[in-house]
Length: 258
Image (cartoon, rainbow, N blue to C red; front, side):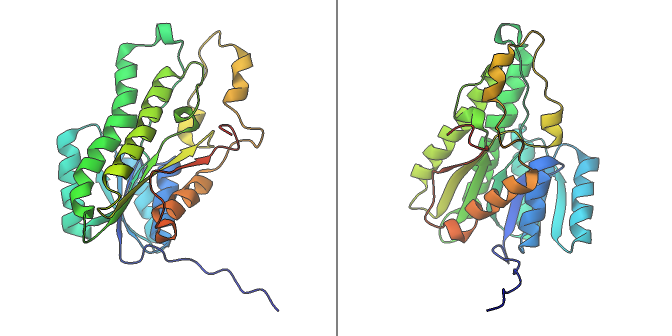
């Protein structure tokens, strides 16, 4: 029997999806993946020019995407943006919280302002997005929320106290929401990448004097994954193929957290 050509799945036809951090990296790859499967994608980021590049690339590929400049740490901006998305594209059925920042510091030397900013973007931002999106997802409609954390949310990593705290908090917040909304039509799951070949990863450096013996906990022997590989996992767990999955953590980290 001859092998049939691979068919492009259309798991998000007729649905509106919101993707934060869509200007680059995993966020951009996720927006492209969801749009290629039929979603109308609201692309959110603070980087307006890069965000327009994402939307332009999606338009060239025939996808349906729209740019919304939004700081996910701004409560009022988040509320206004989600309402605009609902009014313009239709109620959001999928929310992918991808926006995040990182950085390695000797904990005793870490500026308090950086600690606050990392928790604001990585943990408060997803909370604000979820709080704004949930009313649009409740029965009888339903919805799927995917929070992108990290292997640092599952295991300790030297020089990453803020990253571990914020991503670990995101994992537990997701589990709490999964329990709270399990019978109300909303699924909440986590995708936890390890090292990713993306712009943010390239800008992160270990602090001066870092002990190289800690590096084995930061780098998989499988190397770095690509944004497309993470986006594929996000699309799967956001789709109805995972209809009975909530409160789960899908690790895409090359075995780092195994």
